[in-house]
Image (tube, rainbow, N blue to C red; front, top):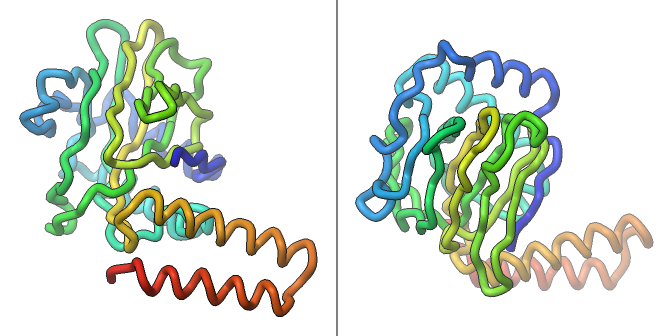
Length: 228
């Protein structure tokens, strides 16, 4: 499931993020954090994880996630890998087709996080750069994603994906992973669709015996599938 989260960052947060991610930020070679399978395909810059900028930005992004009910409903987060930040510029910068590691170690929290759900938060507007699409390969074909600054996309961590070469400007983004309480993508999708439609039914008809019963179905499924 690909899900577009609109306006995850508000304008003030986005402006602060862009200020902290300027040319004077401590950018490093992105290959330093790539695993063995991905290092040959990765050509970009990454914000140093131990920098003051990274620490502030991580808290900014995590705060935005905590207030977004759509994110919680779709991801059902158990753990969140500390947000990372990258930049792709004109030239050789790209990230070829790869699959993210199944379990990653967070330097910020010292936790191991299973990568059930991947997230990319766009921090540059589409008119600021050409290329730089996130391509997600799934059973429906290749799906290109290039969103407004402040918007994010969730997609399964099991997906083969890539970032196409940037041919003008610079693509700046945050990326991270979520270990979900519900491991399976299809189970998460079922719960998300049920939750979303329950909300719509309540908005249209108010609380009823039917919405109460369906709410029970949701929580019984979650109780059956979730690990905490």
